[in-house]
Image (cartoon, rainbow, N blue to C red; front, side, top):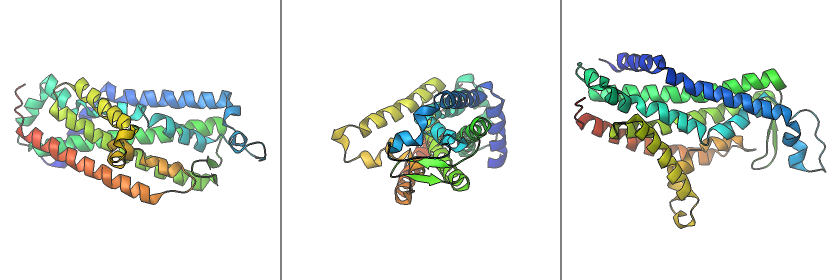
Length: 277
């Protein structure tokens, strides 16, 4: 079986499961709550509140682009990694637990092909749910607030027009999707190592939490730049007044190194494990 055929099979299995769509429902609910809160508490989000009383600001600061930026800030910290970990963490362990993995491996297909097809399917899900976050927030934000400028405060003040703001958000969501693919690879590796999908998903979140805690401990300042969670939020560089392309490149290289190592470990273990059920 070629990789393309194996991938089609994996995508078919993935999107036939109702649990796969639960993540999209949760994301839509979050965007709805964020939009509702922004609508009924608009005074808290005025640009003048950030700049101080010496500035006079005309126009509206809450727009569809604002909702998309706020959704990225809120969801990418915990929610999106959890959703990716739950789905991707069950791609191998779930089939092993249900007994279908053994049947799959009796077919004339290489184990590396099976695992790589699951890896690509998991990354497709991670990209899809991340882009759904951005598109749904833009759509709902447009219906409630309309189009407008994107105001960025980090690293200075920048007011981007609708076209430039949309392009900046597209860059940010693209980097966020890549980061969620890295989380998916971590979940897949743990799914290969452990037989229970809940264990794989839980350990994925645990690894992220432990790495995040180490990041803020003063004893580990020397290794902080190399940690997984330090480089995971590289999309935040696009939410600053000026994009720090150097930090994005460095974070992307570190994540690529992590991903390569995790894929190699998953392939080595998966090719040697005895699937007896």
